[in-house]
Image (spheres, rainbow, N blue to C red):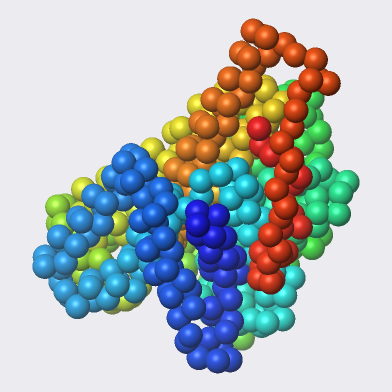
Amino acid sequence: MPGKNSNLFVCYVFLVLARIPELLGLHLGSLHIAMVLLIVLSFACVFAGLGRAVASKPGRFMILCTLWILLGIPFGVWKGGSFQVVTDHWATSFLIFFASASLVESTKSLWRVAAAAFLAMAFLSTLGPTLFGTGGIIGRFNFSVGTLSNANLLGQHLLFGLPFCILIVKRRGLFTAMGLSAAATSLLLIMIVLKTGSRGSFAAMVLMALTALLEVSMADKLKMIVGYLALGAVVIVFTPGGALERYKLIFTSSQESSSPGNSNQAASSAFDQSPDDEIASTAEASSEARRRHLIHSLIVTAAHPIFGVGAGNFKIAAADYAASIGERADWLETHNAYTQLSSETGIPGLTFYLLMIFFATKPLFSIRKRTKDKPELRDIANFASAIRMSILATFTTGLFASLAYEYYFPMISGLSVSFCYVAELAIAESTRRREASVAAPAPSSLVRHPKAPARNLTINPILTAIERIQPDKRLV
């Protein structure tokens, strides 16, 4: 039964990360496949590791955050809107956390989840542009329909799954069919993310690259630096000029490149602007709007520090504040997940949320430190790094996007809970074997190995594809 439950969760991970429900909805209408599967998984949690998930520190703070969001609804400026955010978004995130924290109970299940994430990223990066269409934003890459039509969200979504593609490369080796496929997918993901022109995603990739550099030996650092330089050259050649213009604005502003005394340029019409000038001015306007929303969200937080203005109600509160000071209301989100929470759920809601992320991340450092120098546990160390990288990418892009109620943080935090449970079992087993071999070493000819059970065949195409990625050896 636990194995079947984990298989269902693996299928769910692929469906959600590959955006299959959205794709089917475009042609068949809303079938609620993901929600039905998630409800089934929620019942399965009761018979799996739900107690372990609830007892974990991330689980406790997830529950506290949820209770605080619910307590804040009566104090919201629009109670119906807050209730809709909870039912449409946060309820799904809540269930995803406990599914990912409860149903992954073995090394095999962990690798299946990683394989599902890799296959989802491969699907999106290769077939996504054809199935969802592209275009619509000048100088930027995005899908035409669905939630990933937002270029910033597309970049964040792909970075969420990128570490698991790299993990498959480390596990299977670069010069294998699966390793080459995962490496090609990783490069394709990086190129697409750069084409989105998302400055938040660009910052996240830089931090991920620097973090990866700190984790390796000096010899490997030199190799990685050479690889980064080669990748940088490719990026400059193949990244569209519009996206490059947006990245330049991270370090400078469009005004610096123009002549300050040129009155003819100031009087020129929009039709006289070059595409690059139009992209730069649009990016400047976006940056200014983000700064304004950040200030407004901090002001709203200061005015409502306990319960906030209610989940999903920042736009209303910000519009009221803008009207009070004689400004035009933008009716937009905060574009920052953390001030989104502080303004809508109060400082306690933000604190519970951040503590969930903190306690999901903290054990990963200890586990990697204890396993990185042990060959039989090297896969554990690599898996810890992958989860950390996914958290880092999501945390960084969260500074530029209103994704607090989405499933990204709950899913990766829940997976961290499951991983830490499995990793501790693997470390304990490795320690027991080492001690046994030292105490009573036996000739290899006398060691008996139990016959491996026959593998069950499956007609599920998702699990069939994932089975081909599974390594023959285990983590321990």
